[in-house]
Image (cartoon, rainbow, N blue to C red; front, side):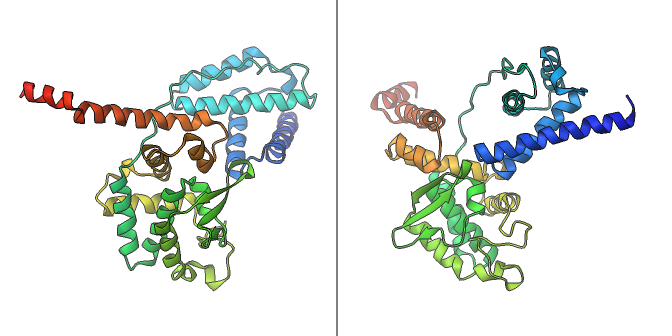
Length: 316
């Protein structure tokens, strides 16, 4: 195949990919980060399956794609599932737009995977990190402490936390308005201690303004987005974990979100209420946290039940 012909084919494929991503953004409310992931997945597919015409792609090509993903052995099952989901959506788009006569990806199934139980921190470990940051006189720690307090109080996703607008909190009603996945909004109650941490942070906020310019973000920075990035927050959380005497490998923004859900369920909050606060579209996603609380309950029974104590005495 000549270079000029390959350039034409590549341009056609690129146009289809761009149209697909525009559709996912407009109709499904995909975030910029999700769109970037979709683009990488589709581009990788065409690297593995270089074709002259998307209409010519068949089950044999898709089988080869699956083999390539499994042969590389560098992708976690979760990543493979996401990649396959993306390709299914891409071919569904092509079929809907009548760009292909048949949808060969209709029966493309992801590998089965067992959902691991979410990791979480003990309540005193989270409190230790927040207290350490709050008691510091360093502006950077004040900011991270306020962010941690808000994340733990409201169970926010890290993407939601870093991109909060300045006036998202109603201090009088003790609520925060959060825009989550698919631009869906939800109102979450905020604990007094988190509100106090944010109020204290406001005294330092202007130090983070880029060149002293006004910012629409609650946590501004000099980054391209104008607010603190997810990566920057991730690194600061790891540093704080070390200062608090915790293993940084156990601490991440997502673990804090898990800790929030686990804390609520351990204290008797209704599962539906936890679902709403976390912004889960499907309650089955929230139900996984009940397994954690069930395991904790079983451990309590094994160690604290009177019969367990009798058994321990006999063994001694």
